Length: 460
Image (cartoon, rainbow, N blue to C red; front, side):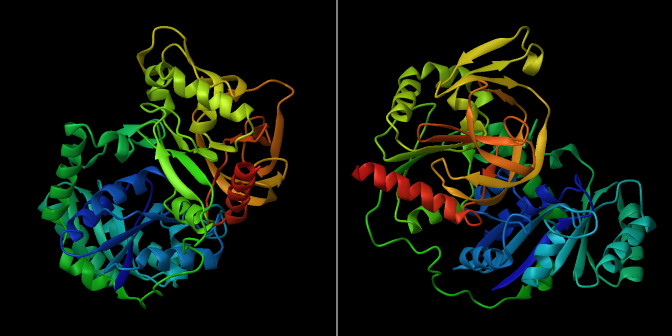
């Protein structure tokens, strides 16, 4: 059992496409468990798709050190190789003078080496200076190898490789040509989610092209030689062990419109005793359950379908009024408002359009708005389905939600921008909707409170 990290010298270095291809190729030979540094749903969806094992997130801002070790060990059960994809540049994080939230912090915590992806477009010898600088910036980080990206020919590769190997003392194990085939399908908040795109032949063909390109230009045996042995994790961790008792049924919205979930959510809910089922707000009727979770996603790309499923929308509104616990994040929050309005000019629209949504919260969602990608920190006052407590999470949206002036909010943020300034977590009856995304391990107490409320309501 071995592990390593693939990180980049910057955002846009190509590490996502390269990590995806490496995971796909090595999964043909062994069991690969992937991880993603940072709070991100979309990159993990690709890594999950090509390995058939749920990718798990690791983040030193949101999670305690012990939680990261626990998630890593839990994920590694039954795996031959742990492959961690970094976030942005290796040293980018939540702070300018510290490494909290960075790939480097995770690499140090887990004691794993780094393969650095360097965008070598228009540079040769300077690539060695970049690598040398990354090596010396934090001597605790073990950069063991380099993959060059965006190279333009054999001379380019030769010069950059010779410079790096001479001045930095580590091998260049691959050099990827500059080609548009290495670019995956993009959208306003990043890549198109794998669950949504996998039904399109062109989407899958683009992934195959990326994998084929990497296979030709990276030495996978050399990469594996750089991975370090790690100790085998315990067979089970009580933290993730499913409860023996039969608990409440919680239905999770999961389809092409709502699929932003951390893999650990399903483990945590089951460990709390919940019976978990999934359903589609696009295609299905609402199932009977003791509680509902609506995660994030891209509901704005499925507005006609969501509006057409009137039976679903009415049932959600009715169940909310009955006091059935409902928890919604971001895209889920948008779906629970009265309407989603899209401005003229967005996605080629000639005029502003409006689509009716559930109406659990009076008010509307406006698309597009200022793009928000940020860490969040705050306090929950407890007058909501997830109870009181301090939390850290993140926000990831391109919309504004406008709710009535008398809306009750249960989150007060000290960092981040909520629905209304520092106010987030709108509450009505036993329904909570927020822009804040919580991680189920670091916010275990809040998800535990939600399961408990669902259990109490079902018995009541």
